[in-house]
Length: 81
View 1 (cartoon, rainbow, N blue to C red):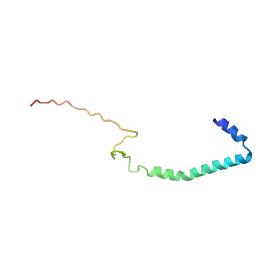
View 2 (spheres, rainbow, N blue to C red):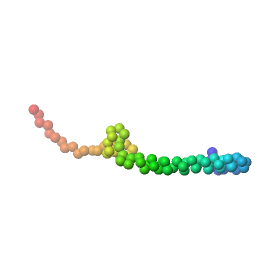
View 3 (cartoon, one colour):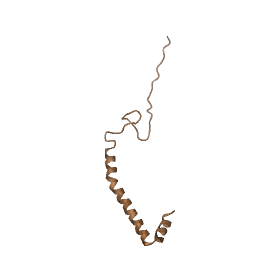
View 4 (tube, rainbow, N blue to C red):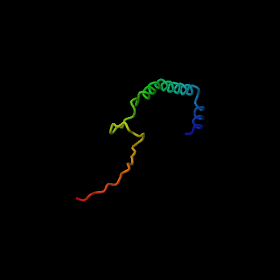
């Protein structure tokens, strides 16, 4: 259902039904805004000590996954015994 169709359906409601819908939206928005400080506090407290890998507990991590470090290896000659 598109927004235009939704608006048409709302306009087709009688005044009591429109009032009930308005109250529903007001209460829904009020309950969300009341919980917003909780979400903000959790966000502020989360990872205050930095990020840690959940698998190996390393502090040297990359967001969204792993990375490989290519090391320059020098060739060593082997001496036969």
